Image 1 (spheres, rainbow, N blue to C red):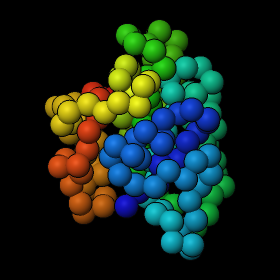
Image 2 (tube, rainbow, N blue to C red; image 1 turned 180 degrees about the vertical axis):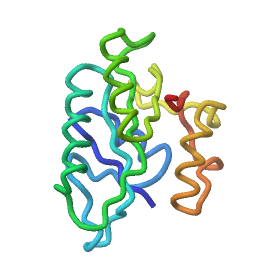
Image 3 (cartoon, rainbow, N blue to C red; image 1 turned 45 degrees about the vertical axis):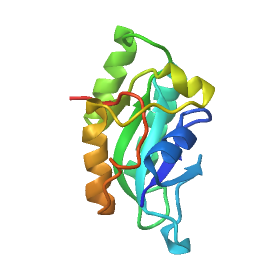
Length: 152
């Protein structure tokens, strides 16, 4: 089981937790001592404020400003609009990628209406593998998501 941590309001943790499994703990670090999963997926949108919030959360992790037992699995960046990221925001992704693994979730119009897609597409496999190896349970059979891709 994993905890989905929102770097800021509206990041997409509720949707991702519902579609892929895990616990949405909101805008706080989970507390493994209280039984919450210590393996964390930090989630932010790809707009400037989302990137700033993600950077601040990554810095808090670096400084040890979190409960004991936290392990960051990845940063998950959810597109804030369809299409490519502007160059300036893409540069921020590259900087964060130097600190941790980054998975990018593209714009999925159906999610705006609370709709789910069919079986997970090819692009979700990298994140699915991360979740299945960290939780020892494959999410492929139950996940219904839009396209996802890992930043390289």
